[in-house]
Image 1 (spheres, helix red, strand yellow):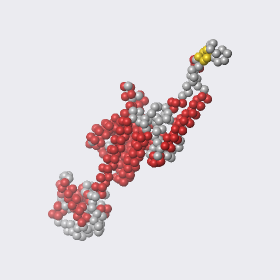
Image 2: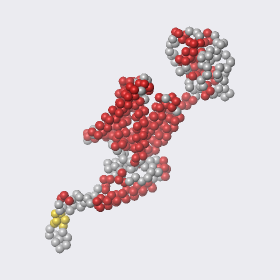
Image 3: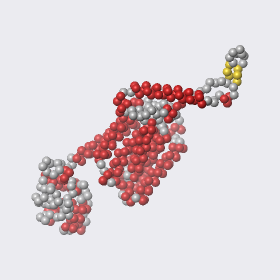
Image 4: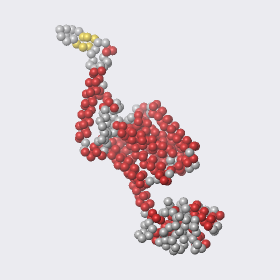
Length: 423
């Protein structure tokens, strides 16, 4: 019984190869690519992106390898696994010959003697016998499949998958799940050394350790690696958000939300529905793990939707005045100082606004937004609230001097966090 919890030598070798691959990718990016090596935030995404790209492509391959849908063609009977729990498997086509070691003689000599055959001939199979057995097994398989398929409701055949003929364990599944587990281990080890602030307790330690345990159970104990591998296609949203984090021009919140909704909500629901109701051979613990994962995805998607709603409501839009879209447009001349502003009035404004807002009713240079409009006043109130709430960094003494050059440098240094300068 204890041997069921010990990985085989093949599984251990696969784990070592995957671990070496992850470490190699990390240190190559850190050493030879300055974009990652000089920024810990970017460095923390190296392993995540590599892992998400590999397992999402591999998960799609595992999903289409044996999973059947309404548009799938018939899969040859011989392609199914011979391991138990794989749905229809081939152990039933083995030909068992009759024991002819002692065969009674029929006819005139009946009852007098027995014919003894050479024991080495008893286990020989003829090619014709194997073909007959295989043909009968294939015919029985397709009859059972057609009967079961016709009994399924039409919506199940259109929406959901047919995973009854999907193997529970496969070499592809073993590799993908092991690759995922080794990424989690590498991310924790490298995170402790190079980006410790990015490894949080819940999203780092708890998440990674739980999925390492799930991967170990799927590969070694439960032998459900292929079932887990088919779910890994849901890592596509991770690729989308990772690329957007590394390059702001590639960021697209709506694309992330769409891929998350399609893959982690709808696709995951369809696949888990068939795992729960269409695979009696799957263990109860595996089904419970799948349900727990699906509930977490729903919770994370709900939080993301609430975040997007808050972001949309941050800058108000007043009819007849500037819109939120216009308010976020950068000014053409950010370094021009208003001629009518006094030194006292300049000092009362935040540094990032001294060179950008005229303290008069004249239009701002390079923009059609009036300073006394309710929209701009709302933005200035937000700026004042942020300035009073968030501790500001000390301004260097040379930036405190009056004059256009010093104020221009202040505006350039602090425009990155100013709400009115959001691009």
